[in-house]
Length: 90
Image 1 (cartoon, rainbow, N blue to C red):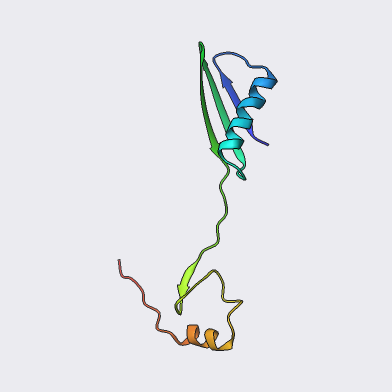
Image 2 (image 1 turned 135 degrees about the vertical axis):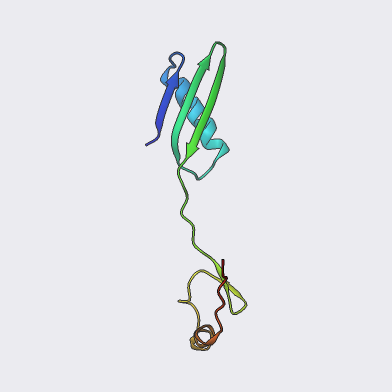
């Protein structure tokens, strides 16, 4: 559930729902974390923060872009196991 902060006045629930619908339309498939609505006379400043999206790490291994090795056959697993792994000195 998103957290909504209103400063500088008050809004009806219908207006709040309209602002939320606008944010959702601009960011389809994302979850809203917080919404800050600042009323300034006839103007409204709308700022929001979206919930973080988890991502899968993708690496280039033996010429293939992969997230995990679970779909590799025995030959590709052996190739990955036998390759020379380099490190970067900082």
